[in-house]
Image (cartoon, rainbow, N blue to C red; front, side):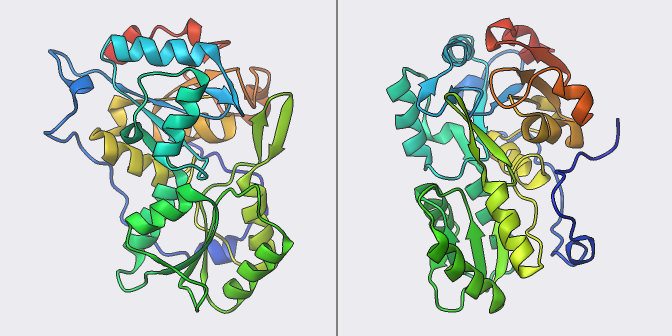
Amino acid sequence: MNKQIQFKTMQFINQRSKLPKLDVHFIELNEKTDKRREGKNKMKTMLFDLDGTMYRGPQPIEAGIRAVNFCAEHHIPYLFLTNNSMRTPEENVKHMTDMGYTNVHAEDFVNSAMAAADYAARLDPNKRKAWMIGQNGMRQALFNEGFEITDDHPDYVFIGLDKTADYATYSKALAMLLDGAMLIGTNHDRILAKPGGFEVGNGAVVTLFEYATGKPSPKIGKPDLPILETALKKAGISKEDAIIIGDNLETDVALGYNNQVQTVFVQSGVHQEKDIERLQIFPDLTVSSLDDVDFLALANA
């Protein structure tokens, strides 16, 4: 299983070959670790997805609450790894605690906006002008990497999930892209799970701009490497010490599949077991609920 899983969106093969190349490397375990990583034996870190794994919109997935509590009680390290760029880590904490989650802290979150801002910051240290479609999570990530948010000839236009964006906003972004700004989409999710169904994902919006400009966005979020590198760096681990857990075969599971990271596929959101053969994306473990996962065994394997 060494083939790469790609989203089945429009192909920009010639243009993609011209995208800037960054040095690819995995971050080894840091000497400094937090309390959850202390102990006689180093445990693997759980990288939990959010939408469709921990909650659906405003509704918690109760098995997710139990999973996080179990990991915290047994000192199993974990991070929340999400393609949703809307919220800041602090807003994510409030969103989850309002649902009944405990044991969640701002430092536990890595989102696609952080990965996108980190990616762009490493392209050219002299380019720090950006415009964005997105919400607080995108804005905070750009500020943290030293970007100025401006519509005056920006170097980059970042496209993150923004459920309030309208046609005029899209047209403004298009004008800056046609004027020479580089398109950077935070992620390529086609759809998002919500109570009773699904809604349009940020990937559909990014593809709109790729089609309108004829230029591709670099692949940042799950299932691609940049967001994984950001998470590994934050956790201070190598990929062999991570386990990716999520509901989406095309993002969560494919991230592990593409990068030789162990995966757990939970059928609580976008995909079901029947989709595995259809998509040809194969998780290491498939469960109906996070209640079915033996986290101690996983962490110590």
